[in-house]
Image (cartoon, rainbow, N blue to C red; front, side, top):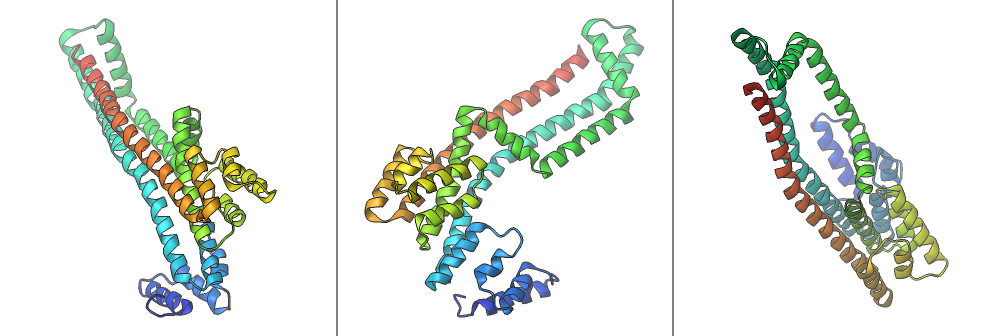
Length: 317
């Protein structure tokens, strides 16, 4: 579009590239068919599966103001902020996950292969054992005599974990557990508020009034609690309440956020204030992730070392 193409030409170009890459049923092809039927870009995007509500709203705002390029650029910046915060979580989880997997693999190798061999060698050399040695030998003999059942049980556990994670239940349960701890709950709320205020900043810059922007942000809210709080604040604003007080009473901002939104009520720069509030919450969340990573990594290493070391000590004892 920046190069001078119309929207239809731009989508047609993307669709042609998809066909050359062997993707005839790509989203761009579906979108092109909708546009050729006379639909507006926002309406065509809305009919695509899993299109973000904020993207549809941003494009609709660009169509209203005839400034689609800026609307798309603003959405890409918004998406970049969201992706950056999510990458922080993924990056922080990679190293602990690797340490845990490697530690479990070493422990399983010791339990399934090494310990049964040690147990048979001990019995041949020393005869009957007592105490911890006897317990270790019994465990080793059980594992050695039921290797197939033990391996099948482990594979079943891995499969169940995979289904639990892939189905999204792991994320839901993690959030529930996190919300039960006050200081973790505050940081989860920081992440959700960062996303919410970034969406508000994008929509307000696109010309949406505050109540409409809050309605769209509520549809894409990251939790039911946040959506309910946004609805409460929006209803209070529609009844004549101030934006800053309504957000504060719905617990959607702290004192700094309330003062920033109050300043925006005087100068009209709501999208700038929302962007600043989003960055403040985002920085708090990033700091939390960094600190948790620094604490969790050595603890995990210590636990893995104790687990593997404990098995080895039991064998040598």
